[in-house]
Length: 67
Image (cartoon, rainbow, N blue to C red; front, side, top):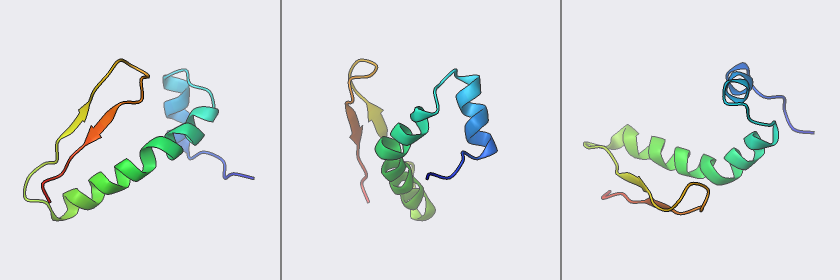
């Protein structure tokens, strides 16, 4: 059984009128990207460029790093 959402997660879901299943999808699709961005920023001398390409919901994402 999955852990219950943290208070900030529950607040985010409520504020944006999202169902509880959004958290599962967010973890599946965004957690690795967020971890990579955080790791980059810890040692970066400059920001990383993240560009979202495509229509909303198309699933297109470009992530680049010079490091």
